[in-house]
Length: 270
Image (cartoon, rainbow, N blue to C red):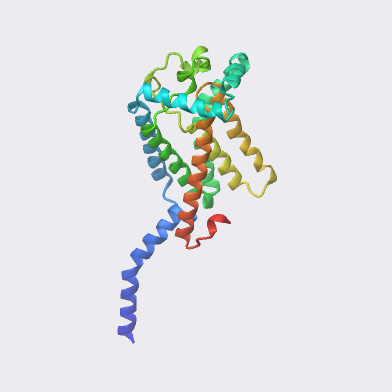
């Protein structure tokens, strides 16, 4: 009997590392339990942001091809009668309050609210964190690849009748940028990462605050962001739609991956 017990214990010890590794993988990327230390996540996110800056600075693309794609986007939208960019931009440009409010909204909120919501989910809604983090990372990574492969000029650089409101009023030194901002890729318009991150923020609030009925209010944020990016001349409607679609696709893929890690192929739809 003792030899059998010893053999069983030996087999248990042999299999335990693989079981631990699988359990850890499911925790870090599936169920949300057993997340890695916060400083590991900070390093990963910091590396991702550094990669974003590298792409923004060193991947500029061809101005001719970027403007050509922008003209094509405008032609398609005009054909479909989905071309409010000029009207919205001129409305914003003709109102001082809208010029400054949209300018500071565009330049600040995007970089402040997204990490704050990510931190909030990490510490107060841990069971939802792994899924939402992976959606944000996946969305941002695909967007960076698209900036690299498909440079697209924003309306303010491709349409003569669009006013660059941030530059005209020199909001946040837009007319005279310094440091990394002076080297930013001007042809990273498709998809709109501002809209994509805003949709992610609304999604995170919607998921974490359920079943509270007023959680629908969160979707006003991406709606306002879409108005801002169009009104400031930084994006076409198509860019905003692509950003929202990218978040949905990332959520769909991440849901299936997480469901597989949990061993419940149907759980992504629950």
